[in-house]
Image (tube, rainbow over all chains, first blue to last red; front, side, top):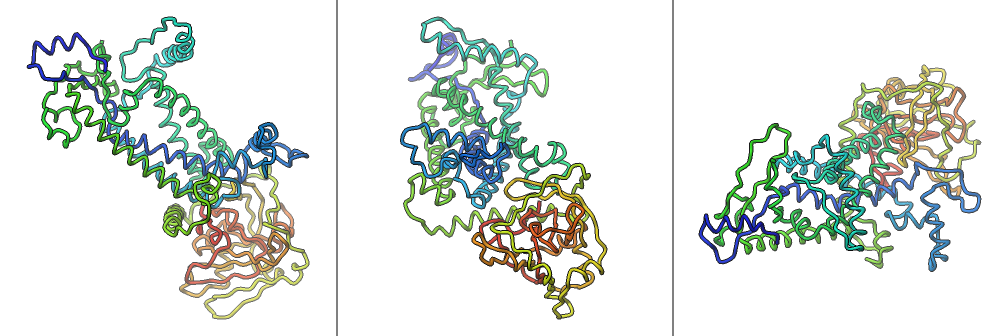
Length: 276
Length: 301
């Protein structure tokens, strides 16, 4: 656990020594934020699984039916290609369904998928409320607000992450850009974008669900058909966020993961130069 | 550090050995606050970590089990989690409950005075033949009659298309038809208002629902498969709910439900029944073709 030696020395002079030296911790995440963070995992998984099944009932992106396969859906084409080229899958019963059989509940499951999607969608909205309350009470929302310098700084962070594996392999020194806020600029952009994407997913979901009663909201997103496209790509925003998110947390280590479970981080020394 | 602390909330102020690093006052309401640095005994931190790991771990296991339980049986079979169909009434209850809540939300959103957007003729899109199965043979059309049941008079009324066209004013509208599958089409309809039919042939006083039936509908193998939908009378009375007789300027063709079909733009396409042969007004909610197959019942959009 990282200690600040300077602080430890200071401590021994000011307070009575204890059998085991104390650890400096900072509170990172409010309990409600932590709960909503982890609840997102099953809820988003349920939304994506059922959502892709719903998409398959009437794919947004279509081409002219292929005379050989009868497929009109580029995603189904990927499955056909996989079945044709991956050994052991040549005998697959329905190649156009391969993708949907492996990334959704399965094709032809519209009624079941819709029920599951509504259940998860209502839970997702409730969970969003938990997050909003948690970050309001804990004050964590302030750390997510974008800053003017974020674009330049996040490019710096991006370059750092890209170069890190190369630097490790070539045993070169690769310095982490300095920052004195809770999150670095790239994290801030990502963690700010995800609640925004969540909100937009909810809004476009309502547009697709109630395009007539919420016609004004439908108009904001450019109509019913455009809202389906928005909703579809917003799912990919979550996927694109999740992949580096999980990799970076695992790479960053136990303290970061623990802070989302316990709420505390022992990386307290960084806060010393916080307001300088 | 005493042991009682483990039962208290992990707030820095509750622990006995805390010291906060003095911080500068933030410049604005939106500025990030400096973190509160607290000193805790390592064993206490370990205890918190253990406790929360166990709690969150138990929650994760419950979420995986609960979420997996909600997945359809065919999906679970494909994943190799179960090998045969199981009878899980509670799961059906929970999923149906969420469907009902969603229907209640839709009903609360509905307003008889809220009109759906209308479009211009240049915005019309092709409307596909969406007969689920086989398009019926047009030979039913000359013999076609609409039967009304559950009327205030207690009688059963039978009308042919000439009578309907002669006795009601036709209204035109270009509206969007939205299918539960996700596709939609903008079509130019003309027909009589359902509301006008309800005024001309009033239903019995307790009636809250209409059951609309098409006896000419065919199943996927060309077998007779009557199609039926439930429609709440509040929606039937909406000014844009038509009993359409015309599409795109001409009389309805057989694939679009000649000679009379429902056009309720505030409902999903599956409620927009084609080739209606009978309308029955009822007090209680009647059965619905797609609700029996796991879809929602109200389908307001």
